[in-house]
Image (cartoon, rainbow, N blue to C red; front, top):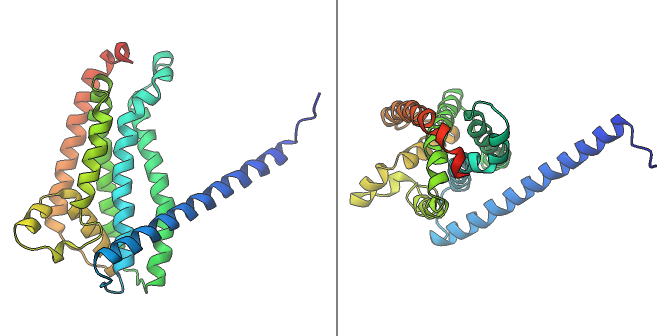
Amino acid sequence: MPVPFPPYRRNKTKQRRILKLLVLLLLISSLYFLIMYFVFTAFRGGQHDSTYAANLFLGIVIFTFFQEGVIFGMNSLLDMSGIILKVNFPRQIAIFSSVLMAVINLSINFIVTLIITLVFSFNPNFIGLLYAFFIIVIIFMLVYGLSLFLSIIIIRLRDLQHIMDLFFQLLFWGSAIFYSIDEISGTTGDLIRLNPIAILVDAARKGFISGQVDHLSTVLIVFVLTIIVVVTGQIFFNKRIKKVAEYF
């Protein structure tokens, strides 16, 4: 019979595995960001200012957080269907915990972004950082509210996964990720400014990188609408959750 490792040996082994995983994730994120940087720099004809890299990476990080949060939250009930059928617990916990996974990924990607912004002479401003954090909170609430709806709908409409994949591909190009809203004028610019994600991305970038509190009135409107989404989503979820078990 093999002799088990002492507890402290097992803990050290787990810590090393976690550290290796974090380093691997950081390397993957850095490589992905570098590829995106070279691609979109070429797309712009090689013309950009000194903060373009920081703006691009921060935009990707925020959009990825929104996308992953919605996808994780939408699939949360299906992914935990085995536990849901056996254990009685508040079903919102499944959605909340899934969205938190996106927050963890955001934190890892944020480390890479912070390093890049420091390289490009990032000068932190407390008001701007606070404003950017407020926007991240809004996005988190919006993701949670949307997940309350989508996690119920996808149980009856399994093709929703493919629809959302296509939706996010289209949304990426209209969310001011590799360009600034200020660069787009005319009807196209007006249409992009109707996209709340584009406004939140642009406002968070300006707050984080340059300390500007931009689009404040629009951000506050989005915040109020987000609260409405969360409240109505909670009502919708509570009404439908008791009937979904038969469709797992």
